[in-house]
Amino acid sequence: MAGNSSITIRRARRDDVGVIVTMLADDPLGSARERLEDPLPPSYFHAFEALASDPHIRLVVAEDGAGAVVGCLQLCILPGLSSQGASRGLIEDVRVATHCRSRGIGERMVQWAIAEARASGCKLVELFTHNTRVDASHPGGVASIAKRVLPFIPVNAR
Image 1 (cartoon, rainbow, N blue to C red):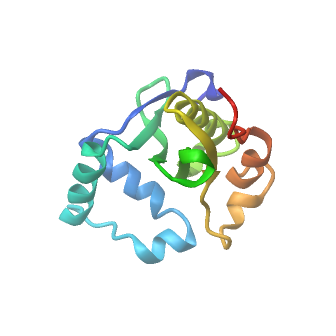
Image 2 (image 1 turned 90 degrees about the vertical axis):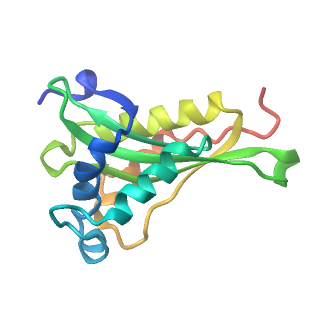
């Protein structure tokens, strides 16, 4: 696979659930909490239907030039009273397939999520990651990327 220039970010579909769960399970935390079975437990598909029908949640995947799903993330748009009723974007469950890491795909997805949050009127964007995820904090990991690309939007911004 080439760099991230051939990456397309799109809404996840029901037939993406298996590869998403595989990516979610591909770290020590996920391997302990996810169930990789064939077929997948119905709970994953019930959750997908709830996510897909919620207008405040965007579950997306990154597709490479060949159409393979190589990353995913979830963006939640949360209304709030704080900051003069400002909405905030919450980015979570950022994953990149093991064989595609360190190619800028995670950064590209986070940048997409920030732009989507801004377009949805969010005044703040937060990245949620577990503090034990070592891969998230290494240079090029999602926490490192967040420090470079999360331009928290001031409340008074228009």
